[in-house]
Image: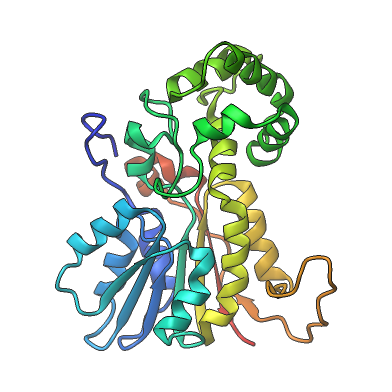
Length: 315
């Protein structure tokens, strides 16, 4: 999990790997989608459960993840990968000719360890690095660019809604004051600003943890992507196909629970227009929510917040 230096590629330990894949109940000749490749842990185990006629398509927005997949699964005819946001998987699968034919869909919503541990990616603050935070560094604005221009009111809202930070206003004020003195370009710089502004530290948690989470979610549009992907999952899977989703914080898990326990809104209908009446809910929950056991937590402490939910498409 820990890189030996800032340029090392950190190892990634897949969370709830056996549980997620086992609950998909793989069939040897099935078609499967790993919508969040990461570093291929789930994909590798899923491939081991498929026969020669089975197929696995992976997606990831991160070009480094895509490069890893090409290297790791070179020569594996059952595997292919596409660089794409999982929010766009409907278009990807339509081009693939798989829409409505997928037997199992896996979504691991966590940030991968290489993203967290490699300082240059700017996701964490355990090592000082460039303040980027983009899952795809080739598109969009970096966290440093966003912080340079965001107004205080929006920053307060982001910290409060996406980080569930009770001291959002105080921290936002400190960030705005600090950027007036010099640009905020480094993760260590931002972490120190938040640390100094935070009046009450949680035990075993760095005071900047919630703020970094909030900014990362905003930069990558993560919650909108999750909502879109969950809506799309109904079109992707065949009747009887299964969806397994691993979430890592309450905001994600809330979206998952809402999607699986109530009618999924049609993403093609504008939000201001009413949704048509839904007679049949498309999902049936499979088992209860699953969390990592003691053995996994001992090997991978980052699994402590992970929650796996599984559902089968029934309509």
